Length: 439
Ligand code: FES
Ligand SMILES: [Fe+2]
Image (cartoon, rainbow, N blue to C red; front, side, top):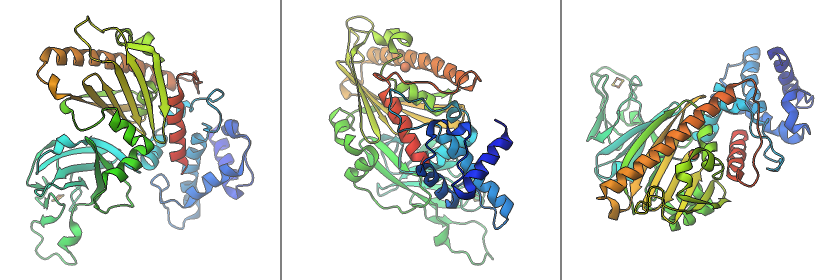
């Protein structure tokens, strides 16, 4: 299809939401239902970064409308209403198109609670760490009174990044011109501003973000329309973040009783969803791609359960991985996927978390944080062997994920199918994505 065809079709679509075009874009929703019309039209007035406002200029205004509609058409190529047994997987453009990633950042990542780190990172007053998600740069800190704060990590003077890395600070001093902020975000000092007019220190504090904790994890809500710093009840946050799975995770040993051990960070040349999909295939790839891991699991026992925004995969332990005295996985492994990009794995005395951050349409970073039960903290041999084995599995997965990205970028591939008995959680993930992208 040429781009002019594509534009014509979309113009048709906008003109009255009546002339539904019969383009191949509509292959999976040929019903051309009223649903589709409703989906697209509200987007016209969204204050959406992918739809920059061009004032009253009619033509430019029209272009600003066309851009998100193109994306909505791409989103709609996946039909969540088709049963898993008949469904096609999302088209490869979901994994390759830069504007699709912009839409995901806006509608998925910058809404609702997102895991950003763990409480031990800011255990003491004055501790802080920084991070980013898409274009949002953030800093999380604990003030002198013990209260946790999250702010945009951007100086209010000329937008310099304020803090970097992690550590301890009694205040944030901007590296550019020295404006200084308290750990509560208040502007304490604005240097050399004598003569300035219409300026109020009170209005130039750091811009806050909503922050909360659940168990050992720190969560932030990046929604730009919410900037209060209210304190949240753990139960409420748990329900919002994990839905009815909140208690189940707690009962599975996903809690604050383990201690942080170490962090491994990997950069992968693949879309962030490729890593998630690989995680969510119900152990399908394990016997083929992770022969070492397969020997430590009883794959016949693999089970998948879906909740609102969480899917749980469980598997019993098998024979020992590397001899009888080494049992990294224990009797049962629980793999929890928390939409959209956070995975918590609990096995034996271990808990590890995988936070997948999109860096571009074909690049992501995966942060592995390892936590261990206190009784094993001094067992250096066990720790070393466990981390080695875990790293080997990650390297096997990285090779797979980077190969998949190349396949997705190939003209030979458009979309695939699900293996119904094992890839339920992956389908659930794609349906949740679709739901978030259209609302
Ligand atoms: S940009 Fe921060 S003080 Fe100038
Ligand atoms: Fe894997």
